[in-house]
Image 1 (tube, rainbow, N blue to C red):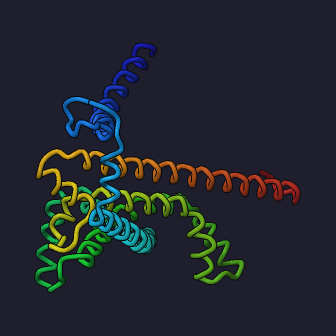
Image 2 (image 1 turned 180 degrees about the vertical axis):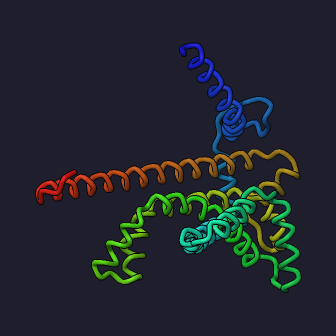
Image 3 (image 1 turned 90 degrees about the vertical axis):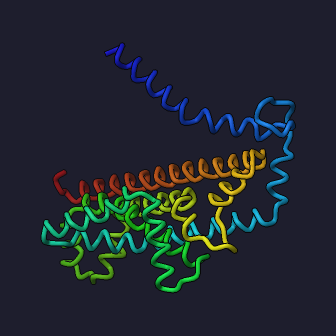
Amino acid sequence: MGDKSKLANVYLFVVFLVLYAPILYLMYYSFNSGGTMHGFEGFTLEWYMEVFQDTRLIIIVINTLVIALLSAAIATIIGIMGALAIERMQRRRVKNTLLSLNNVLIVNPDVIIGASFLILFTIVGIKLGFVSVLLSHIAFSIPITVLMILPRLQEMSPTLVDAALDLGASRRDVLTKVILPFIKPGIFSGFFMALTYSLDDFAVTFFVTGSGYSTLSVEIYSRARQGVALSINALSTLIFLFTVLLVIGYYFINRRYNQVSMHKADRMKESAADLGVPQ
């Protein structure tokens, strides 16, 4: 067991090294005053200042954040409705078919999705730009939110809904006061996953952006094609740090919610014990 444990630790170390070494290399040279990635000549914040002084880049960052937040929020709302609809399906064959179609959209290559949206928007007459990017991001984020919400929904006991209905709760009260609070961790997970996918997406966005509209992924690709510039390193470092903050924020929100849930469960057990209900 000891040898297997050491081998597993070595394997994990190698995996994380391969994943994070290029990012750390990029971050390291974002502070290089030499202007190249071949030799570190001295520490400087010049490239970060260049990023913050680039008005066009700031607008693109705002565009990216607006698209990510809007698409994640809308996709999460639609994902909740989709997960509820799938869970309430009585026919197992229909339910499995819907789940399979949902999963196919997740594993489908982004190039095919992007090309399909480009053809669709061209036929319908939607101008490429903010609307086309937003619609496409909502579309590929919905299957992700459904996949994150559905397992939590399946964990909920049907007796909770039956008990609420027996106590006189309306369908709306059951949804807002029983179901949604129970699946809240899945909702947060779906939202943050959709937000991350939207910020990270390049292939689909590349197909559906117009000439006057761009996002960070497309902009970084365009600038990288012109040659290595350390301002790209600085911008990529800032994006990476922002993503880390999102992950940390999600961790603390989830941890706080679990603590509150455990506290409520303990109080319910104490109340039941006071009433003489067997545990």
